[in-house]
Image 1: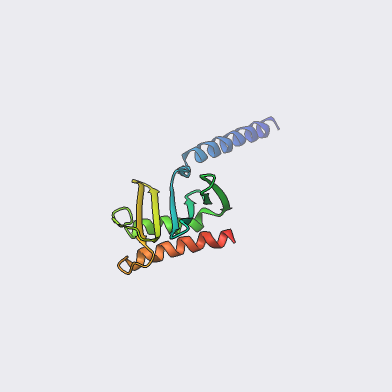
Image 2 (image 1 turned 60 degrees about the horizontal axis):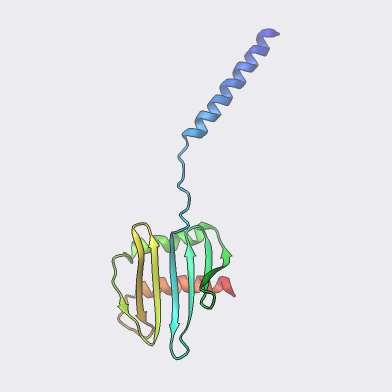
Amino acid sequence: MKVISIFKKVASLIVGITLIVGCSMMNKTEPLDYETYVIVGEGGGFAGSYIQYKINQNGSIEQLDFNEEKYIEIAKVSTSYVDGFFNRIEELNLGELEISSPGNMSRYIEINYMDINDHKLIWAMESTSINPDVKSFFIDAFNFCKALNE
């Protein structure tokens, strides 16, 4: 019986060590960077009013309170919902584009992602010369946030 008891202890010790070593060798994922985001906004005109949303990589969706000058979280979604926006930033090379043609009413995208820091694209709402993919990105991101805020 003593042999079986010792065998059980040794087997438990081997299993425990295997689990500890195995877990420590697993690929570690990088924590989500809370400073990684894309901002979409629009406004201007006579009243000078704007609506601005911030999509954070961690899934937090915020709206800027222009009076208080601070963001207020309007939703928290799975990161899988926002990953597509960050992937499209890369696919469309938004960090390489230079668009600076504001109008009376303007739309804009601000990016802080990977090696793109505080990059802003701004154009007049009525502009017909903006790349349709950029417009599509803006509309998709803006409407996504707007729907969460309703």
